[in-house]
Structure formats: structure tokens, C-alpha cells
Length: 173
Image (cartoon, rainbow, N blue to C red; front, top):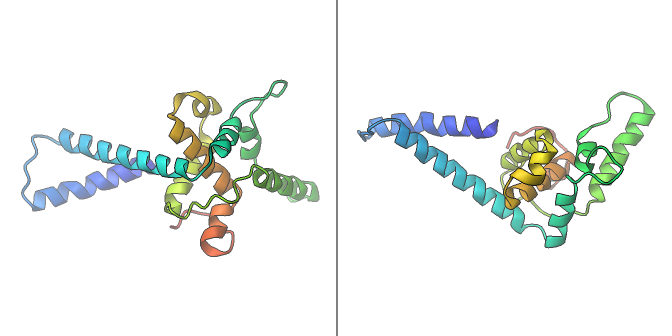
């Protein structure tokens, strides 16, 4: 996803830059490791920044979205990820209900403007496609909370309103 394009772009720009300055590398492997380390550090800063924007209670609410309640077959996040489709009034009512459910999570006061919108959208894209089990267990705490926060922010359209005063779709920032 965005991570691969970012690493490739950094690498593709670094090689000519180093050659122009006559920097000798024993192989491309050290540069590959350096780019990976820098990208990893940038991701960690992003996750920690987003984690710092929410309270402990809000983090618990976000993490609860990936839990499957007893008697249900899917998590709340899975329900929110499924956008209603169609052109009927019933579909519109479902869509408005979904917006109300996202707003009811209680993250409307969290301002993500300290993070570039493109990074939030990229992280939300991960949250919209990731397996709920991996979001529940396999990821570091800061990454799980940050991913869920970005997913809820973008799926509710709130990040776009904060930036421009209107809802816009896409990642043109």
C-alpha cells in the first residue's frame, strides 16, 4: 500500500542522490535497511502521535470495536466497514444510521490535524481492509489504537470536515 510506494520512492530518490555525491555503498542492502529503519521510525511516531490524542477511555472504546460481542458473529468495526449500497430510501436511512453510530463512538472532539491527512487516510485504509483478528491481537498497542482512530475518523468523514469545512473523499493531501 502506501508504505511500499513510500519506501520505493525514498529508495529511488536516494540512489541517484548518493551517486551524484559519489558516496560508495558496498551494496544496495545497507541503503535498503536504512530506508526500512527510517520508515519504521516514521510509522512509530505517527502511531504514538495519534495515541497521544485520545484518552484512555477513548482507547478502550476503539479497541472494543474489534471485539465480537457474545451472540454476534461480527465485530462493531466489521459492521461499520460495510457501507450500505443502493439508491433507495432504506439505504439512505441505513447510511444515516451508520453515520450516527460512528458519531456515537465519542471521538468527535479528537482533532487529527496535527497529522498529514494523507497519513491518516493511508492508516484508515489499513483499518478498512485488515483482518479484525490482526487488529485485535497481532499489532502493537499504539498501532492498533491509531489504526482504529484513523478508520473511524475517515469513515465518519470527520477528518475531511476539519480540514476544509466540507466532506471530500480521496487522499489528495
